[in-house]
Image (cartoon, rainbow, N blue to C red):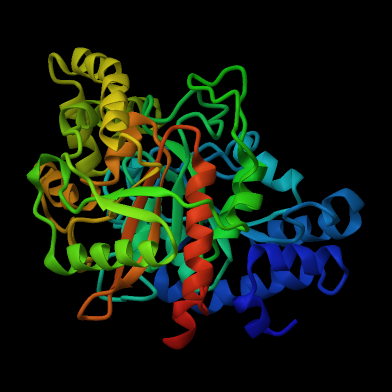
Length: 469
């Protein structure tokens, strides 16, 4: 197969070509590894490239009729470094662990059972605690569409792998915007599901109620397809979503009914929003109106959730820091964050914060009123330059993180589904993303709306990096 054909292909089209016998899983895997070999030395999206393992897995797909006919037959997928991949060290972006995982986590095992080929593990900031992918051990990841600006985080390596065309879809994780933030920075689609949509097994939860895994993609339907493969609970999961409204792929391929959409550019906590970001959000609201939806400004202000989010985030970082094999190897900022988590009263603050999540969720539902969807910016600011964590204190790192996560982290606290969609470009040509949120359990509405917008605007375009490399 030609490299250009691979780079332009969606996950759905790759799987169909493999099922129909036009491409083999081995051909697709070789094409993916060629792109990784060409682009990753510059972008640093991967910490591990599983070349030999991926080729062996592709041969298994070719030899197994069930895998060859799977929904993700032969699709190359990469995994964020916080998830267990059998035989690989689960690094969480750092150097605190040294023993390889004995088995795949539930997300990875479901991907393999669907015929996917795992080609690598992606770069992330240690424990995913910052929206900038600049880990000390592995170095910063470069944004394929804006090489002098941050790729976002914490799923920055996954975003770079997709935006550059190395893979059509990647697995990330979102505890405060960590899928949606890098999606906005790279002009991708990134969706955080309703709390409980995806099992964290063998873990019981990630960062308490805040985090769950999910895909990033150029094509909305690709993310829907991956969610349909990985969604579902285990009995050990702390947070369960026993009843799903519908499979998401049919929703992504079908225009929604006329939706009621409330929009705002006022962030919680009075964080200033950049003028160009606000204007892009307003233009997007107008675009939704042109598509036939009822779009009105939101009357109230979003709930201020900062006092709930931060204690839960600190508790999550502390739990992960105390679980690694070599705590002495943790990065400077990670040790500082863990120390904050150990301060007197922090454990109790985290317990109070978890108890407050449902009240905030109810306030958000009340604010939505009759609306089906809430539209906001994804970030309060334009994409900042690289080096946001260079030499800074933990407090300064958190301060720099706030404009990146002010809009996104609300959905992690409340458990609502939320997605970042590419909206436009700023005056310097950098991507601007908008966020859409729906009521809990209505991930299907977000996929239906995103799919409709994508079709109207001609998504997905060719991988951005194909125009720069």
